[in-house]
Image 1 (cartoon, rainbow, N blue to C red):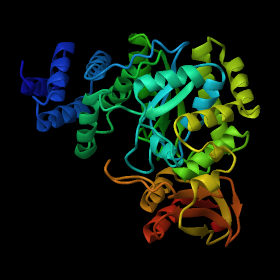
Image 2: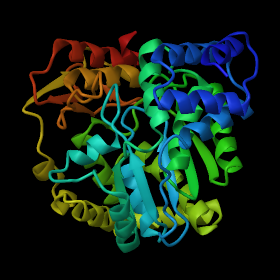
Image 3: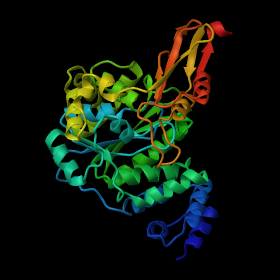
Image 4: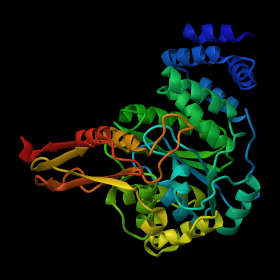
Amino acid sequence: MRAVDIIIKKRDGLRLTAGEIRFFIENYTAGRIPDEQASALAMAIFFRGMDYEETAAMTLAMAESGKQVDLSSIRGVKVDKHSTGGIGDKTTLVVGPVTAACGIPVAKMSGRALGFTGGTIDKLESIPGFNTSVAISDMVEQVNRIGLCVAGQTEELAPADKKLYALRDITGTVDSIPLIAASIMSKKIAAGADAIVLDVKYGSGAFMKTKEDAQKLADTMCGIGNTVGRKTLAVLNSMEEPLGNCVGNSVEVAEAIEVLKGGGPADLVSHCVELSANMISLGLGMDFAAAEKLAAEKLSDGSALGKFAEMVEAQGGDPEVCADPERVLGKGAFSRWICAEKDGVIQKVDAYRTGMAAFTLGAGRAVKTDPADPHAGVILIAKSGSVVKKGDRLCLLLSDSPVRDEAVGFIKEAFVFGGGNE
């Protein structure tokens, strides 16, 4: 068997066997197949696609390319959650504690993100002292003790995905449903959870631009998860506008804490309750309506906030962040208010442009070695439906570096006006 023959076969639109896919993934991971050939196969898949069986075979080969996490010594049904990304998506910081407060163990591995803002790990590391480098044995002990741990992914977890994703990012092959599904599900399967809830985004601030494509991706991932014995379900969510009012790292932590205290923006609260209810339903075998009620109770009675504080303290962070987020997290050395230049009604705050503003301020990274500014971000004062007068504040830009005009340009373009502007 030769790698070039596999590439040609897929280039010509033919179906690959599970054996061919495993051969390619194993040898690419081991360094016996060069990046050039892996890039060629990714491009062939991008244009020719893969059927469900091919995608499932690729997922399993990638999941088995490294170590499998064994969570069997954690008591109860372990439920994981994964988001396909978005602008202002801090849901893990809320749904993890809510789910754990219901007695469901949450042992979650998250990553650092490329692009607009940092990932969940970057957000948590904006809390002084918070340690995300947790050994699996320590994660198991912590989850058995307090019910919750969110840590960085180990290098041994699905190494084939790490290599392939780096190639896809620079060869224009990211937006492929089979490749996205295999990438996400290989890590989730290798991470050892019993059940998985997928938060699949669509819109201007997401990989999937249409709801139809998001549904296809969700169906593919759920099929793979359920086929390999992981109870898997998906929730679709629009990302035309940012989720919540804050986009960045520390500012999103502060907003998540606000939700855990029983407040927060309605859109963020609603989505977190929906995700939590699905996790609770899988973990406790409860119907969705009852699980939704329980999730809301854990936010209102303070028990979810207590779980978050326990996790922060267990992982070396300052639990006082729950009482006084601004003092513990600090804030950007530079700030700039953006005000309305005319009267009108905000019709939309574009997620992509808001994300680009946060990225330009320093909240994200272009390559994985770039630092992410923990204080950079955008705090929205007005969102769709807001009636504003000329001079009213629309949002606040924050950064540890002088606010760049480029960021101002992006955020001004994000606000789409109607009404009095016409």
